[in-house]
Length: 114
Image (spheres, helix red, strand yellow):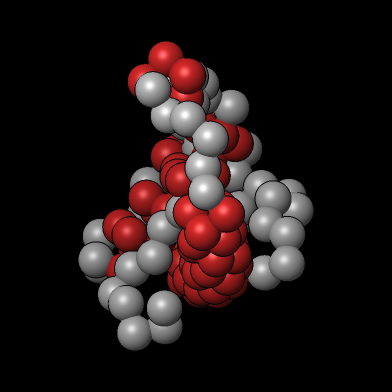
């Protein structure tokens, strides 16, 4: 995770975009990146996120074997580990961008465990 040029996460999408701009050497737009700004990250975080779910029965997915459930469980545990590492990395990058920009990007305690 630490060797990647940039790491972003969906639940901190607006903040992730600000970090990407910072890492790319572009100036941070205070109105778009500052917490509490009119176009800032606080306003963007309340934007509607659309997700689509599919009814398993509607697509013909029946009961899963214990082996499949065990594989899904392992994948889910790995995903949680990678997600936590991504949040920690993004939080460090946000703090670095905030220090350079001179204004807060992350609004309040939005990242748990980072």
